[in-house]
Length: 346
Image 1 (spheres, rainbow, N blue to C red):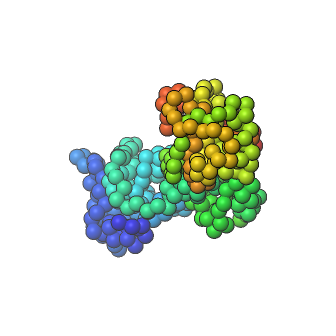
Image 2: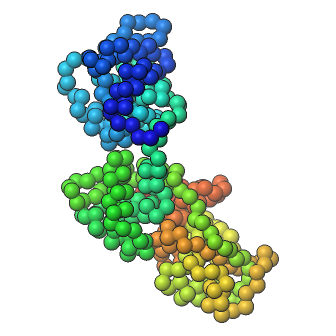
Image 3: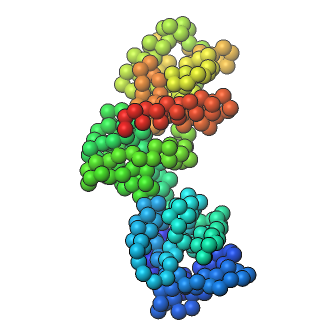
């Protein structure tokens, strides 16, 4: 099913579709009174609750709904949303307000007791909105905020992305910022300003939505150049940003990590063309290779490229976090450096 609105939520309650084990929920008369009765399944008297439909069940939407209930008279409120994940249920517990979703999850305060249930799947996904915010080209907005936690205008976010080699439209940046604000990842101190307030959450979202770059072709082999000559030539070829080391090959710049003894790069041009530009004999082989090339147009890997073809610490962290034990340990070090830098710049 698609996105729910408040009338849809009310219709579901009227139809008796609101349920949560271990509760008895009586919605008779809800259409006229706006209240329902909730009681423990096996014992105890029921209590009346005033229903507050919440179609926008983002963390920000929930906080707004909670704030609107403070000081209201009558029965205790119960927020009813399409879906409440664990983090949102924890928010309700923290604010000591009841909430139930249409999937069977919820937290209800009855007298001195708290009845809690989670784990039921989301039957009302909103589509690509949330995940696409942290995935693909749109993720450049989040990456820019991790590198510079505060901007005085939305246009500055777009400019920062361009300066680091990315390309987005103002419309995409605005849309992503709106989603990040709804997720309580950023705040807007004014209509123009943008400030990162939950860097850990932003990193978690980026990692959860991360997809490896799509590679068109690869090359692995031996180039007849010493390490001292190969690196500078690659830097010259990639002066316009078309060559960058992979996350694994860049990790040593940020963490105590020893990767493979070769240069491994992403490149926009085909491996054949890049090898031609190197101007040295090259043989494709798995025996003692000194160069690996992976052709991709994915702008995420080239974004925020550092000197000596080193990838952004964000890209390096994302790639290493999905690797083996040694890579994961290095990824934790890089994550720590990112958070330390954010704190220093906040």
